[in-house]
Amino acid sequence: MIINNANTLLWLELDEFVSGAVNLCKPITTTVTAKYTVDHPHLDWYRVVIEKQGTNQATPVPTQNYGGSLAFRGGNGSAATNVTAWDACSYLVILSAHRRLTNGYAGPSNEWVYRTFCKS
Image (tube, rainbow, N blue to C red; front, side):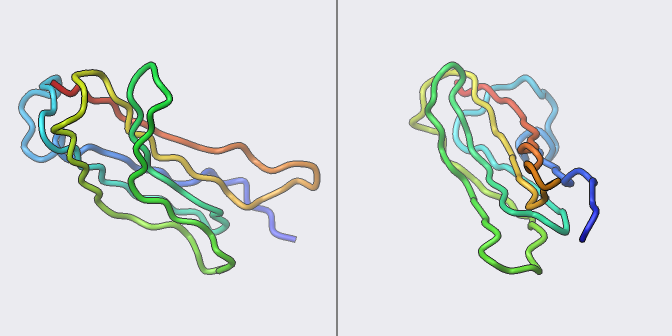
């Protein structure tokens, strides 16, 4: 039996707001770049999606699944998405993950963090 109640390490930032950004409220016009890190010794999967506010429109970025490897702990990376043709609106970038743990009856719920941006 393994006891591990630790939360998943989830880190997400948008490069356009970190790399020399002067105005964090400036709308994005061409590309949004999600930088992320996910880690847990019993990670099942993680994914990054971009959702348009108020709709079910989701654009997947990277998705990584457990796939049977006990060595899978997560990952990190950077994913750039061209948003030039997207509608002017508010968007959510969501990093979510799930641990492969159970208490015998059920497992933990998904964990997530998000960042928002406006497209003009």
